Image: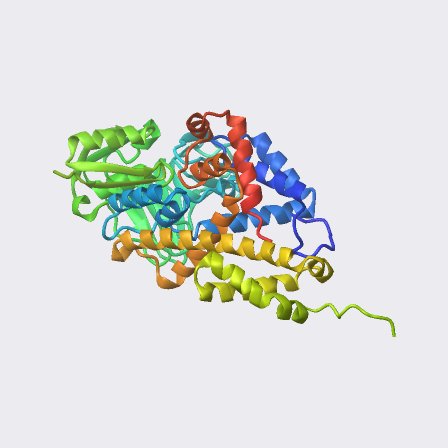
Length: 331
Length: 165
């Protein structure tokens, strides 16, 4: 995006009226649902004056600064004004944490970053889209994809999250391969139905694939490739494709708004649930191995936690909506 | 040669009022070391001001600046104490590394100072939204105001806090 020429120095103060506008835009963009129309008006506002763009950069910089803060500490220091209330807040803090807990950063509330992708879902949102050739893409929570259909291939770039692909026969005269690309490599469809999950969308992360129908060929940068058959799942990084093993039954249940567990370790189950809610959800090490079985609704994760609390010897502690920990039940 | 006013200078201001200011601060802070530090900081702050205005009413100006610094110091000490109390209850492995702790504290002091300028309800709305992750509808219900009011409160807090000059 080109910014109009200005001779104001980069660190000149932002005029109060512009600050007010920028703040109003931030509140809009952090609302529960943001329309495409609001998004386009926001982009137009940013582009219409260099001060607007500078103001928005300041906002992003401060959000970045907030995210370097540890949520527990920020909460204990900022949230309670009077000292007696502060002591209570700190005591609550002590109840929530446990040895080995991570120093959780303040929740990232810059959702607009994923909105530049062709298609995206918010936290807790699931949707399905149909591409030009009839291929269906189910998108899980927090997923962003870019679609690049060209004369030589049908490519979907998985920027973040998880998709389930159900390919349609190509409508073009010369059948083009269908490929899902992640930061680690490419998964080319030989059959028709497979899911790809992008873990940590940077180069150092890994991707995971589960094949439901037909087969898929994974290829990574160093020339390595491997074929994964229906009923199999595999993990791959930029350097290596792991040997496949049996797919977990119900791995695509999220497309039906469900999560299915068969003796799943509690820590893994909570990790799966966590993707459908904002904030952090963590588990004390002593109970990480408790087994979870059953079918649970992914749309209401608080309800799932309540159900778990009734059936397992655990206690769910909520310091804030964003910060939930699971402990062994006391007494 | 006609009488001339003595040259305006911070040195003159310092000589005439520094001792007096330190005494003023010592009475409010209760210890001579903080008083010496803040007296020094006050004169540094004065350097940035229009000296002619200061010279018209030097003690009034100095005490205004010094008072602001006393208030800031008290607020900083409160934050530091809360921060240290919170650190004290964190189990060892989850402590942030030492380098980041100092930076975190500075950021918290900064945010707190800016939030402090806001009416309590505005500050509350912002913290409920940003720290606690409440939806605007839930904040409205909790504070007993409308959703558009919540949006205005949060925007006002952002306007005050996010633009660091």
